[in-house]
Image (cartoon, rainbow, N blue to C red; front, side):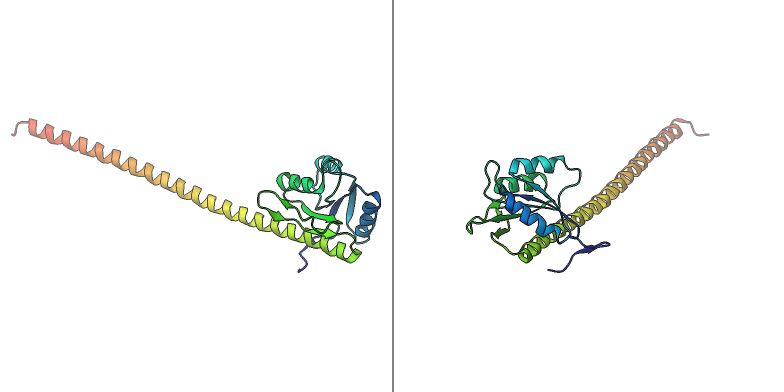
Length: 196
């Protein structure tokens, strides 16, 4: 995948990642691996803590990396909640179970799942790709919104022009009726006056 860049470098450079796993050792390992690649990393030990942290932040995380199997709110439920209420946040799941590929939301779109154990390089590339894909989707959505707004602006201008033309047409009709009434009145007056 090509590197998506902005004026400061690749889109994932310095990205914020929330690592959610009930295993402290795994969270710590993932955190150290990602921080070595200049990601800004925070941790949550379960889905409930993750949602509270996500909700309390002013700026959204770029990526939530969550284990699928956790007590309470698991990774699938966390992913569904994010898809519904924070659709701009990329989600990447991890699991020791190769059959654990959840489908999130009404679209039934599978989420990417990294199988544990994974290498540091595999983690880095998966995180980078997930952030890039999410960024591409956001950019595409922003472009479509801008196009829709431009189309609505053109429609509003056309509607205003139509209203103006209708107003001018009504003014002409009223003026024509006035002239007709005045002309009919003058004809009646001319007919009533005796000829000299």
